[in-house]
Image (cartoon, rainbow, N blue to C red; front, side):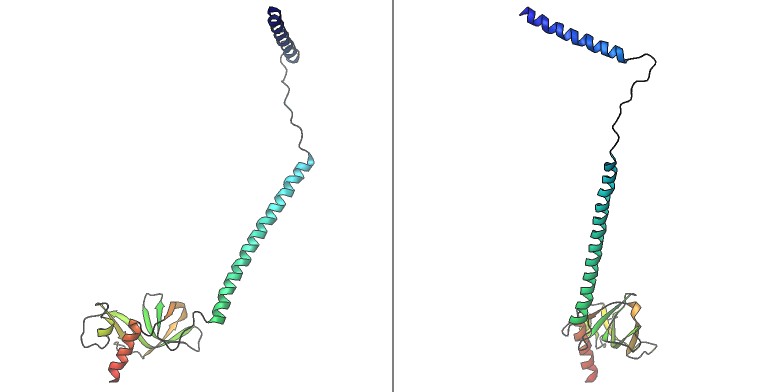
Length: 197
């Protein structure tokens, strides 16, 4: 058993001496150690990276094109839907609320004027903070839900305007058709009922 153990140790010692001899042969004083060399990249690898970028670019452009196309279809669908199904049209049998960029809201009957830059509003009313005047025919109905607001008929102001307005379309934020049984519509109807009797 000793022979076996000593043979193994001898073999290890020989391998170590061979490794030292090899290291001594390759090391040269005052010489530059050999540079590790990397094999040059084959030409096809350079062409592969370009060919991989091209499909990615095409895929990105195609994706952007699809998104733009879908956006155009949505906008076109909305436009055609409003055109054919009448969404957003003014119901001439009802009163409208016209919200302006100034924050003011006017109520009345809306029609576009012959000049496309303006919208015509007739039977005009607006809301004003009330002074609790019990003789006002509008105050009873309009102010019943809110004690400090009153629906005022256009025309009773100091400058005496006619009961019609031409509103620049650029000043209109949005327009709403009012329900016939809504508070503003009921107040307007009560006003006309009171002055007619």
